Image 1 (cartoon, helix red, strand yellow):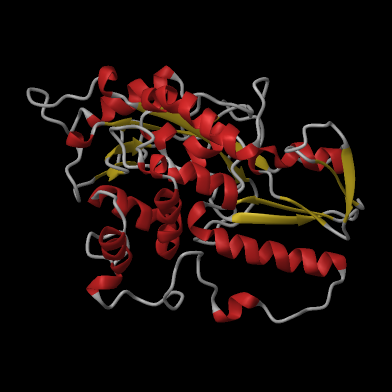
Image 2: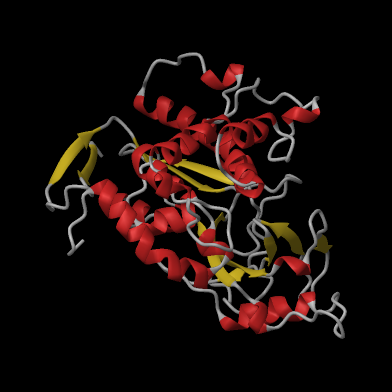
Length: 357
């Protein structure tokens, strides 16, 4: 392996160019095995794909600050019921599936989640029904077989051709991560979970440095690196009430409310999403007043976030904005659908799209 053939998605001319590299990192989630077989056709599969579905209900199902942990569902798993993005997030399922590029939440998953939460809701007051579901989505966890669990036990019980309908087929697979080096220079990272992403990244870079024979330089993580938009010391406790993240009294929220024409909920959402860079988004709306408008009237995201995403966050598709720069697609699928034309128009103006694009 000497690098990767790449294509400029912005130019859309179909031409490719070679980027040379001493080592290539395969961080492709559930598709890791597909990349590994491009390198070694007889590579032993390491991915145990597990589907997890979440649904969104209206906010009145979980008043602010009120959540519920269902520690044992009828199939022996755990489920969480939490306020999120001004609505109610419930999930998740966990079972082995075949890998798909664009998976959709099965109706059976939605029905199962509703039936589980209805065990705890007062049926004469607020039962959860399919009509209440604002959005549903499913992701595929790239669980790695043969890794060590947190108890030190090798999680190999679920290897082999497990029945996809077996609810316990993925429960036995640990959430630890696995790194594999191939002789040709491919470093694969698989497994793991969101909460350990920095540890996973550090281990992967360490493996790539070793594989490529690069000099062992001091790690930036030794001094802790702040997330973008954090203007305080990394990993320091919020000892003052003004430093509490995304609270109405957060200093960034107060500054935005004092200096820009946005409502309180939007100010909180901008602070939550951008931290100290929220002011940069608001500055765009000061230059073009149309950017102060909401993407959707029922939700706090504003048009300035679309422009900011295109200029500074590499957003190139409508899905980038709806799912990955805002959470409108996950929170309210109908609102996302209705907002799509205005998002396309604004992105087209920013990125120079023609009518065919």
